[in-house]
Image 1 (cartoon, one colour):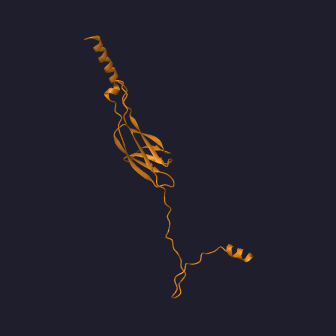
Image 2 (cartoon, helix red, strand yellow):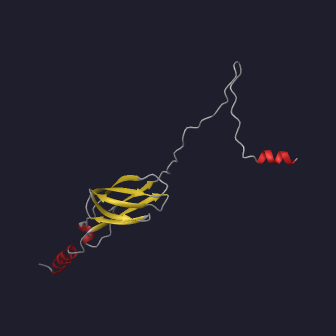
Image 3 (cartoon, rainbow, N blue to C red):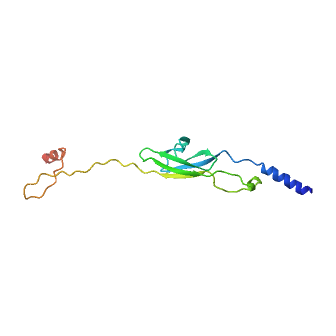
Length: 152
């Protein structure tokens, strides 16, 4: 066997032993507005927490769906599903090539402000006399206007 061929085979076999894919990938969690507390859940198990947002949670390096649940004072709770992609090394990367590929996942949730409960607005009317149109009731006064009129 010629020496260049042997060297090339040795180089390829050593390159194939390159670093393995990591055990975890990152999931970026953001909210608008920022500052919420978010949990990343896989089934019934909390995988990670971001408090406050934005932040990154490390999840297992596998293709999977996670529930992201965010809470912030004064805003409605927000929930969404984020899909993560596994990080897998290709043969070219093992030979030393750099490849840009997406792994992990990212999600940004829009938080909706809570609405204050507003009761029905009632307009009181004075009892109309027969043959007259109803008139709105006078607005109750604190007496400050009456005192000011008496001083004049």
